[in-house]
Image (cartoon, rainbow, N blue to C red; front, side):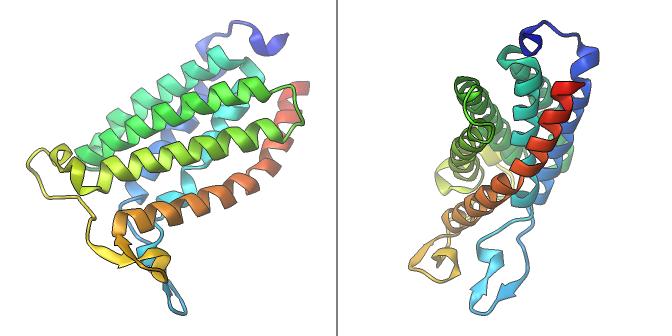
Length: 211
């Protein structure tokens, strides 16, 4: 089967480059809340702009997995991870870089494993389930490490990046720490973007399968 053959870096570099671009962009954009209001809902207490770009990383991983198989998809994840973390040092704080790297690696490797188990099922099931479970793990790890006061030591004596002060949950519920409200809003967007990514996944997967 073609997806399981060994491949050279010449075949995978577009996936690696795309992964690095997405993660670096997300690391930068996650620092900026969405400054819009929908009636009583203040999106700055729910969303960052990174929520809209990061789910594309799961699309890249799943397409690499579909075309090249799980072992090669893990290589794409590893290469994207290394390059993205190095570049993120110049675009984000050390704490965000550490949080992003940890969450990215765990979530993407989980995505690869789940996708591989479901690859022979209905075409949409593997990318949908793997990306949703991966997104859930990524959200908990990233927002916990990046913004929970318990991990303030990751600021290494610099400006405190914790977001532990209280806000209404999703801008309308009971008061919770801001990082929890942001994590919940982030995950909701990841679910919606993950559903939207099924269309380009299906199109690209069919084209690469016949290439």
